[in-house]
Length: 326
Image (tube, rainbow, N blue to C red; front, side, top):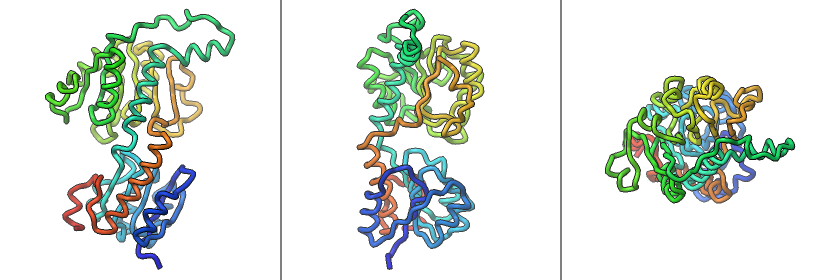
């Protein structure tokens, strides 16, 4: 009988061979499920020591019903599907993988920015309808010298900033948790949120979703932005108040938006965003490359394995819990 049991609550990957290898090496058994609700998680997690979770909700009810849990690992950077406060109260280590897709998300953001600037999708769609006419995309402005405003200045936006500067963009940023000196070293001007919104030609969202950032961008914020500006989001959909964005795009308060994330995923097919010519939407693909996916699965499983072996994991989110369990 295996010493440990680890449940993958839900997953979209074609193989779990990386997790299998790591969990087997610690005398563990990997169980698999496709849970969508907390009730399904509670049922599937009976007698389990740790969870690997993609989208399933790991709520206070889950921790209360399964007090034997020692670790929960999130496949990704954000941990908004996990009740961190409840996890800490129950002595459960929460781990994530904050560094697996820095290049991928930065590249996705840059590709969306370029598509907005050159109106690539609009031109492609109209041409396929029989319109050979560049004038339908007017106006298009030169990219060099335009301002990219970053909301959040962690690892991914710093990666993006270096690539943007190489294209001739000027970079400004808002992040109340970053020191001015660090931003200046990277050639980025650190400003207040309102200043970034007013000055930027492209506003790119790189914020985690929490109580302070939910619907951070709404009607008032969109009215601050230039009418020629584009909004790009590769972070979390609910940082943006979607109905307010739709209204702003319809009124022409913004030139357009490019979203890799939406409030509800998958997006409802009757969502008005899908009908707007000045909006680009991709299916939360920014994190993905073959290399990134392998790194994600490997590091998430290793985080769980470390906790079960009594080792402090490299990416412990709720640091204060370690004194309770070590």
